[in-house]
Figure 1 (cartoon, rainbow, N blue to C red):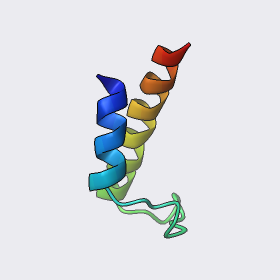
Figure 2 (tube, rainbow, N blue to C red; figure 1 turned 90 degrees about the horizontal axis):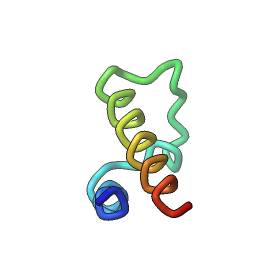
Figure 3 (tube, rainbow, N blue to C red; figure 1 turned 120 degrees about the vertical axis):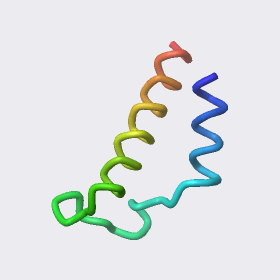
Length: 49
């Protein structure tokens, strides 16, 4: 399930890393997207172990 979510995140959500977004200057909605992507990615990687 998390692998599918990770793939959807990659397609649908913006990549702030490529945009060189500074987390200290990010808006709250950008931080929420970063946190969501981090959560899904870590869960997807845990399932691979």
